Image (cartoon, rainbow, N blue to C red):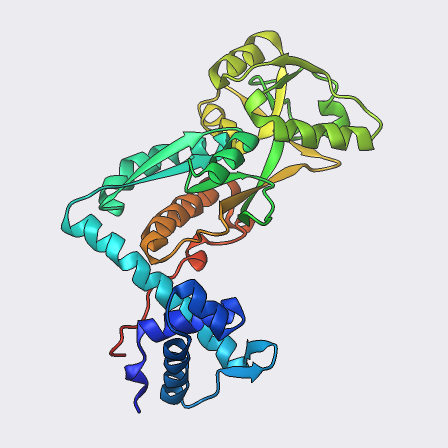
Length: 327
């Protein structure tokens, strides 16, 4: 029998059987007869001409071929499930609203370009980019407010899958001319200045505080200002400084309003990660969106960081395509 006879139903049933660990349990969860479910699995084995399951007294477990078919079948099923959403979007002119939470440094770097290019690059999708502090973004992802987030030093757990995408250095931001001839500054030297703390970037403050403690030093956090424009004004007028990701002030530096000195001994950096709900991974419907975000981040790296700071690409997380039943 030709492999083209494999059906999505057979793959869906097979994946469910592997996940459940037994045909009887899968039948109860799917609300189908155990004999009918077992028949579909046996048909799949016949079509592929290979044994997919080892049947044991305690249940079933997949063979090596079975594990491969399960993983590929899972991708195919996810792709098929997403197809109806895509068809509704394009056939009925529905607009898919996507909420994405972003750390301030990334939103400042790619937000304007995302808005300018969204309509042409993402037909049928409307992005809502929301700036927020790390804990705010994580909470929003967990509650379903955001579909995806970008925030610093995010780690995977039972509910969130995190993928590091970009390394962002921390720098000492000063008024123009204050940096002098030296482009670098030690952390000990940086800590001697009056430092502005941004409440929405508290994670950077934690990194600085820990590094200072390792040196036996204490930072002089003299001000707390959340507004970037007010922070810039205080730095220029009152000889204050701040320690933030250099991306956050790239525009002000380009205009000559601020200067940044690279912190060395030790160098400090944050890792920007892409976060998604573990139970709701991106599928084929998200592939175009993730590619759009990838392109923006790549361009951002080329103009600000250098491509060596890029850690991963988002399109590898989504299912780009799936074979039809006739293939």
